[in-house]
Amino acid sequence: MTTQTRLSHGPPPPRVLRSRQDTLRVPLPRSPEPEPLRHHFQRLEDVFSREEPRRHAYKYVCWLLSRRVPPGGEDGRNRLLTTARWDENQVRDRVRDLVAGQLASRGTSLVVAEEGFVKKGSSSAGVSRQYCAASRRVDNCQIGVFLLSRDALGNTMAIDRELLIPPRWGDGPVARRHADVPDTSHGVSREEVALAMIGRALDSGMPARRVVADAPFYGDSAAFRRALERRRVPYVLASSRSGPLVSQRTAPDGYVHWQFARREGGSYLCYVPAHTDLGDCARVAAATDLCVRSHFASARQEAGLDRYSARKWRAWYRHMTLAMFAHAVLRIDAARPLSPC
Image (tube, rainbow, N blue to C red; front, side, top):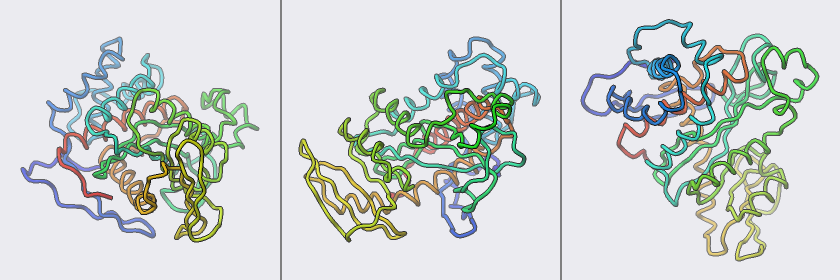
């Protein structure tokens, strides 16, 4: 679902988005005017060595934002996502740098979040019957693992993305070839792709106070937790592990481990500096689910995150990267802080 550019001068009223079980009140920013959009797009222009894909990329972002699209056809958009020569990972890095330069601070959290994209048929890369966060049930869908940057004011934007390839695709070499899924993507767990995204963000100098994840897969993974601890990265991770209401134990180098009960069952596992107040960890944990759902609701409605039909593996990455850029432009151009989550 998309919306048209608003012509009113004041900020738009909040719009209520309804899902099967939840009602989210999401503040929707206005689509950016042409000049700010062109200004931000200049960050990407040198990634496109040829004029044609550069022009189609700008048109694609306009289309995602539901603005008036410059003349051109669907064929150009399809070539942009499939055969055009440009590096989607370079664009991903520019999006991360844009977010870091505009909104990131020392209070920023890196949030590992998953989103499902319901699909028909079985030929789209990574599609399988699995739990879908969007529909909140088992569905035929693709699962994207995203790394979000969330500042102290609640501004939340995606800075990285990975497509999860389910284990069943390991038994289907023909399907993998048809969807152009590289062999290196098969058999990689969600924890491994999350660590890769976190590593890219930290290695780039992105400020991060902590890593947060509300899906229990990450807290349940001892390897995931150890990898963060080796880098002295504090974390607040949901886990299916049960335990006492609250417990604490010391860790090396001035850190402590907290464990406290989770309302939905299980617990939260925390690794934080010893001076950290447990209430701070609890507030971060309580805010994560709503902030993640609000982010994806906004990205879908306002920046076309789910507005794609491409089936190829690389086309998924290209679409998601440009949608991340479109949503970042919206949030930055809104020029007003969101209510704290």
